[in-house]
Image (tube, rainbow, N blue to C red):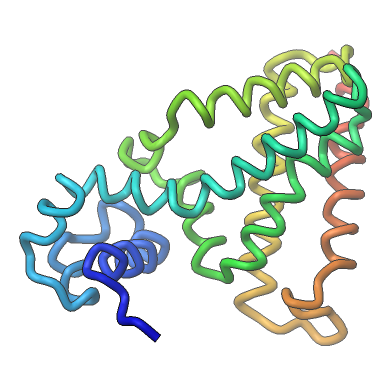
Length: 206
């Protein structure tokens, strides 16, 4: 097996440290030390620590985003008004799959993106990510006309948060009687069913 190149080693080290310590809690020196690279390597390959954060997150998120896009496109090619359950499957399924395959580190990184107060942890999004999110938002709005835009955005954030917390807990501890992440097709079905019910719930009384 070929030894990873310096750029990949830095990405691997940064993903681990950003996931464990957040953006501000991770120094460039710690990253290069773990990667076995010299201190100037981050600047050479990425330009800055902030741009390295963007590269780390994109490496994890872009495959998930592409799968979400493909799922939504397939639904909309069949019908202009997919059901809530179909939309949840297309939106949450790739998140579940990506975090299951990536292990605890990927789930921790997603949690970091959601909770890290550093602006750099949220500055990675671009037009492609925003377009997918907006298209899912529009599709959910058609399926749930009684839910206000603000509450709908809250519910969509909840899909990401619930999936990330679940996958992180499953990877970090073995629960007796529960399937492992590698054998977790039942857990995937549970997640989609639960999130569909949550998305479909009537708005609370004013």
